[in-house]
Amino acid sequence: MADHTITVDAGTYRRLAALAAHRGHTIAELLTDYARSAKPNNAPLTPEEQEAQIAYIREHLIPDFGPADIEAGEQMVRDLKAGRLTRLGGPRFGSQP
Figure 1 (cartoon, rainbow, N blue to C red):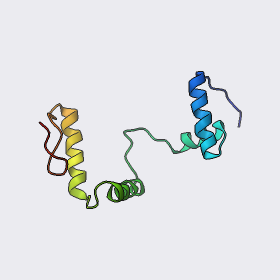
Figure 2 (tube, rainbow, N blue to C red; figure 1 turned 30 degrees about the horizontal axis):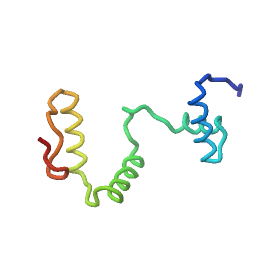
Figure 3 (cartoon, helix red, strand yellow; figure 1 turned 90 degrees about the vertical axis):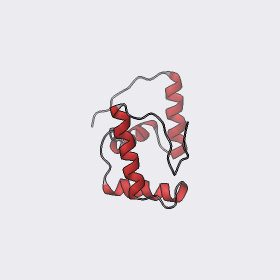
């Protein structure tokens, strides 16, 4: 495979170098790993990814997180996209004025 060069400003280069060093990688390895694992923000989660996220939420944020919470979040996104979201809050998060 041919090598290619990308141009970034000095601050970005330093940040990439620090991130790579922290992981014991070169910048090329860091970017290769990122390119192989990254997906668009709107791409649907695989079942494995969704289970991993639910496990994280239960462990660190909401121990009894469940299907009703997922539905509430999906409804919030639909309302936000439709311009109907006027406030955040609810029984789990406290009412917001």
